[in-house]
Image 1 (cartoon, rainbow, N blue to C red):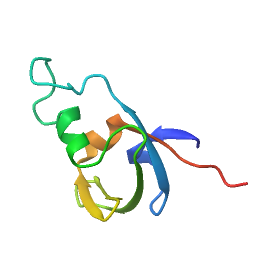
Image 2 (cartoon, one colour):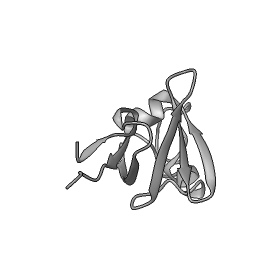
Image 3 (tube, helix red, strand yellow):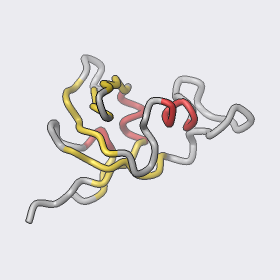
Image 4 (tube, rainbow, N blue to C red):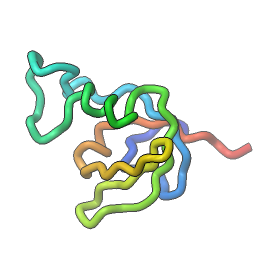
Length: 91
């Protein structure tokens, strides 16, 4: 499973985030689903392409809690389905 949606990554996995789904707007001038954060807001939380994170646990709504550096960030199910991650393969 080299590349996958963050929602499909096994718990405890350390991953590298890839580009997000283009339907997530990078600024307020582009249309996007109002329930999803903008790419700018995600970057402010440390969730940008190339960032390393660890998938810690599931939330009650089937979202995920991820560790990004020293921070813990709760992500909803829809967002985890749109964020792509590279999962290292075991040798």
